[in-house]
Length: 105
Image 1 (cartoon, rainbow, N blue to C red):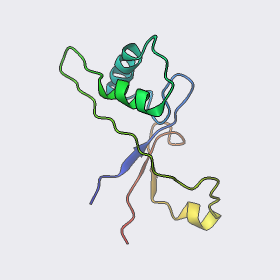
Image 2 (image 1 turned 60 degrees about the horizontal axis):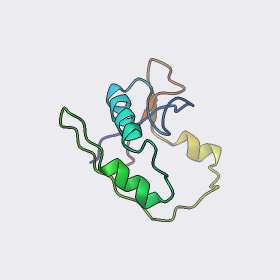
Image 3 (image 1 turned 45 degrees about the vertical axis):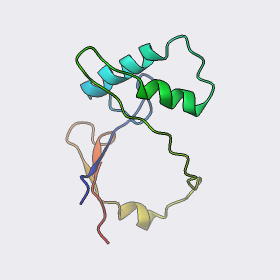
Image 4 (image 1 turned 180 degrees about the vertical axis):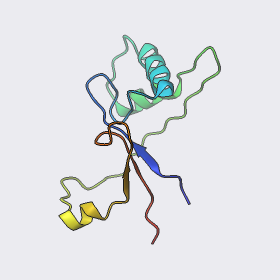
């Protein structure tokens, strides 16, 4: 079984989907930003390549691949569907930080 997904609020200062309290993400995204500084981000492949070629002096390497799958948009959940999501709010800022457990079928 896969581990639960950790979700956190993203804001203006954080890349989408990242946690402002996760120090690893801060170190990683600062390096990615340095790596693509001054380069035109014209295609998704360019972005994925620059991310994948990011390293640090302490040995961090990054794996990145482009997911070209098509995903449906503008899906509306009913209140019942929303309530059925196995969401556990964290003690600190539970509106922004929560764990979603995988659903077993």
